[in-house]
Image (cartoon, rainbow, N blue to C red; front, side, top):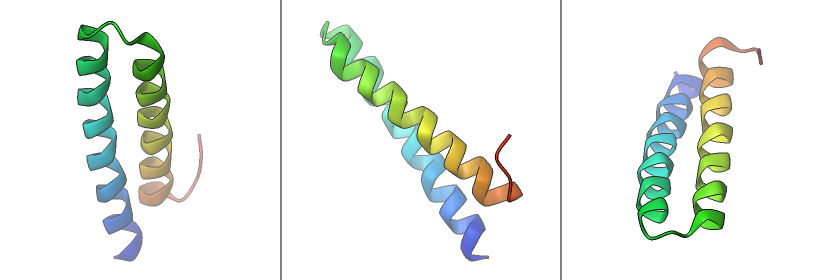
Length: 56
């Protein structure tokens, strides 16, 4: 139960980071967009790990 809640939270944060990266790309702030995309990828990996218990 606790792991699945953490997985949902990190998946939600992943979506927020993708939205923020899109906004940063529109304002031509490519470095900030790259950081948001890196954070989104990290959140995606954490949510996969929380749901399935293994990494790749």
